Length: 223
Image (spheres, rainbow, N blue to C red):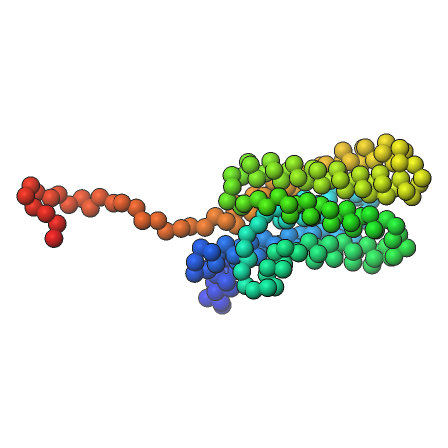
């Protein structure tokens, strides 16, 4: 049983070459991003929509996972998943809204779903390297996530709500406190970036010069 667990762990976490290890771990990172996004809607179903409504990890996850670029290998499926993982992540958003609230609020869902899509596409434009310094990656991802939240709130809260109630000015004023609260969602970015850095920490064997401790007498050479 232990050997089976070790073999499974090696298939998920390890590999024969550095490229294979990195490919597997980035696959895991992408799959965790999809799972993490889906879990938010499970949390909403249990906790209720009224509990901390503007604190969410969907946009930080879409932006953070979408910002990193690393070949997944494994054929067309994994290449497509690397590029279009947001489609699967957003599918959980659509499923939750339709199942729990129905299609009657379609005028709300259109702005909400497209707003999340904007956040994902914005993240994918970053093309960050997971091998860069943590502070630099964190700063870039925080900035992109903050911009994504501002765009999302303007699109849904000002444009969408403005069209619905007939006043963009009132929508803008009313959206300000919600947006300030929504920016608190950036707390999810540091652990996601830290996870990405952890996944690329791979031990690489390096040849190091070592003194043998053997003295060579004058006139004597190595044979």
